Image (tube, rainbow, N blue to C red; front, side, top):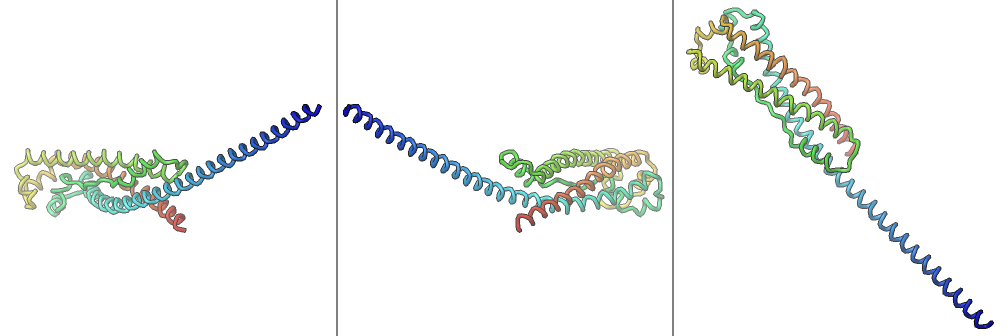
Length: 244
């Protein structure tokens, strides 16, 4: 009887120790898990902080690019706008011989263009960031990327069309008209005045240039300016929030 009691006591003590060990082990596991979760949370916050710093730097580059581009866009709009006023009158036959004789801009009217290319360094950085970051549902990033996706393609395509048409006009004059060298050198030549005032070739080329460069390309430039201004305002508002 005494032996049975002793064995029961030993088993009870052993079971109690095992129970304590189990509780201790579970507690250790819980502490380890909590430590891992806390470390992950800290790492996530640090990663998010690094991403926010990188994003703000990229958006600053985008802002700088847009500022530079809008200056060039304004110059391009002025250049093509002046051409449009003159070409509209020529196409509508509102120009007289006297007007053509006084027209200093006519020799370069359809034989020159304003080169325009968009600075996309900041955009390319933002596009790459957007593909590799954990930032989700940032409407400003989406707006900037969409803005560049649309206008980079449009402006490049139409700009190249204007460039190619301009070169074609220069080559046509070079190959077909004896007054080319004199006029391109800034000299007056009555044969050129006769050409631009009477020859259907000039009227056709002027009309096409006006449609391509002014009615299409210039329209895109003006809309770009409007949308770029909206993006700039949004970027500046974001910067104010981050600064405060």
